Length: 283
Image (cartoon, rainbow, N blue to C red; front, side, top):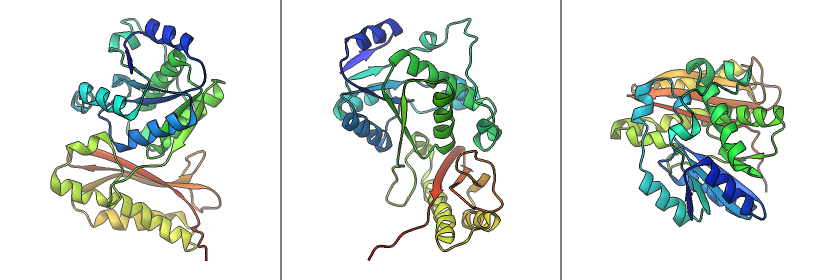
């Protein structure tokens, strides 16, 4: 496995590649969810590349940035064990020069949900992803469905800017009790970890009512709130039933829709999402 730290190194390695590249962009502190992205990249491409960079631009506070979990030797060992061919590990100064002043912004999609809760977050996400795609020039890039709004924002950016990379969504990987894997889960205390089960349970409550025929979005949101209210350690940031493409809040679900939520449990902020589907039973 090659570990590259500078943009000229990456571009030199890219010129030597024959065949397709699948890219897995990460901020490190890897878990089985990242492994699912790597597996897909390896299966669907001739080469699997990854990036490992904790992007300061997408954090709302310096404290959140400094407390984000990091373990570079562990991450590199995991990427090697998983079969990544190249890992780009830039320093902050490599990605953002001292006079850096160019940013990428996607309008509308970023103005609600996570965008409303974390001003400037998506400008940081789209800027770094755009830069990483430009540096590595992959054929495909892999992102999890848990970060549902981020996925849609990146897909829109790639479409609008005619970038020659296909964004591939990968299903959320969950613990046995349904909690979506996330690097921040490491911050949860035992009682907080127990309470965190309620996120997936709330999404399931909306999905079950939707599958049973409920189309009133307020009723679906209320079902989610009812589950979360049973956990005193949870402080709700938002609960959403939105159009799957525009992410505008719905009154009535008449087409593809996304259930999503964000909560605080202690000092940890967690998000999760689920596309609402009519369950089909086969005999």
